[in-house]
Amino acid sequence: MTVATEPLMPSQISHEMGAFDRFAEHASRLASKAWFFVFCVVLVLVWAPSILLIQNIDTWQLIINTITTIVTFLMVALLQNSQTRADHAVQHKLNAIADSLADLMEKSSLAKDAKELRAAVGLEEIESTSHNGG
Image (cartoon, rainbow, N blue to C red; front, side, top):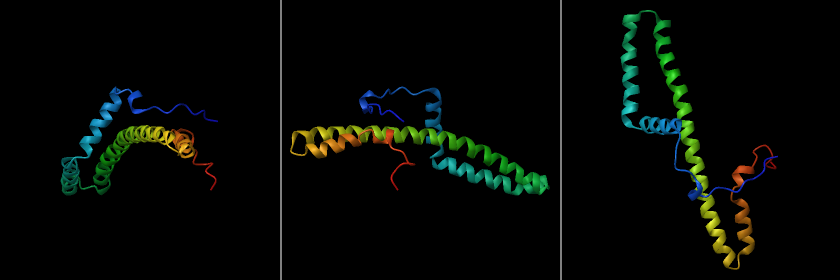
């Protein structure tokens, strides 16, 4: 059983990133640029006529297959790191908004709704996809 911890608010999050996180963020930004796509297209355009030099279709296909597999494997890991950090940042912002809204609701006649809203803050930490009642 997972013990729910108090959800962090954005002001409680450290703004320091580790070396891998900085590298992943930089790689994510580079991969989202138009020139990176152009580079990929140029790579394929340079590879395609190389069949005339290599003349062995298996080796020719292995070259592009190896290059694209390695790049894809590394990019998935880097982009997933960036995506996970972005998801956590959004969740912390939503928690802060919900917490502030609950504070406002408690001051009005919506105390019951405020209780439900407070229960939702941090719900992503304890929610299970395998026990969702469906």
